[in-house]
Length: 103
Figure 1: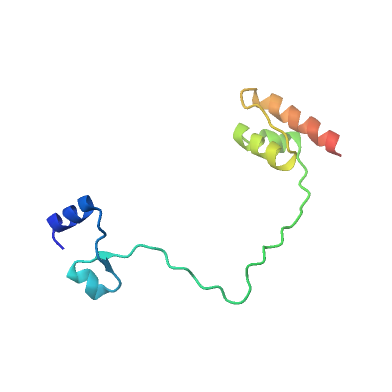
Figure 2: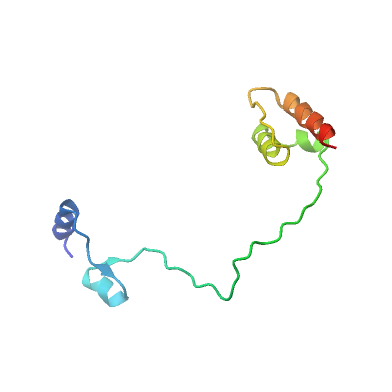
């Protein structure tokens, strides 16, 4: 398909022919980039079992994290919202105090 034919198809809003194999692609049809659905074998849609590991958070382990990681940890594990505008040391102390209250 020539450049001008593609351009007029695009401007007119009509779709270009789609290539389903190599022979059609060589003839000028556009390649098909649509994802194909992968068939499921059996009933494998059960969610993976999550392992509940009790991670102990210490001041040293929390200090190694970034402020963004501390905020995400607070949301995920402790269900609290931390203010990233505060210093990192302040965020660590808030998380540790929440941790001791949760025990």
